[in-house]
Length: 206
Image (tube, rainbow, N blue to C red; front, side, top):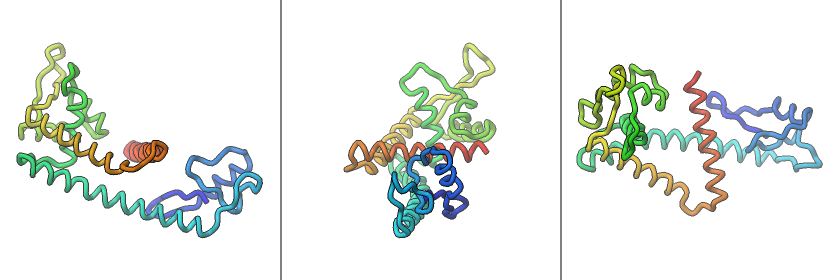
């Protein structure tokens, strides 16, 4: 049966599957047909054992995501402290990454409001975060020569070091996940991560 994670529990998407039977519209990718509504001439019914296995895997994935989320900040912060005493949090490293992605070895510029839009946070909150990183020597702020109302943000040498380490750390994470995967498996994993990113974007926009 199709399983949807809502409010910490698993809910059977029965209504959606009924509509499939009435309209002929195929279920969404990853959905498993319910035994009650699966067309007998197209797909075999899924057993109760399969449904329980799917629910167990979904719960385990949820727990792993929480564990990873809680660990990444601590592990990356420890790495920054260990390498030349760079003490930045994951959220601060994210700001550095946004600035670096736009400006590092490019002719492009980025403002505080653009950083806020990319990080999907409010401008006052981003202004405070950028100012903290400026005070600690990771970023600089300069008035735009062609538009006096605009303030551009750039990396310092110290900020460039954080940017490189942050990028390498995340590339190592991705490589560890995909080690031994076939190209087909990588494609499926990539699609799953895109759906997770879309879920977070939708939640942040509420």
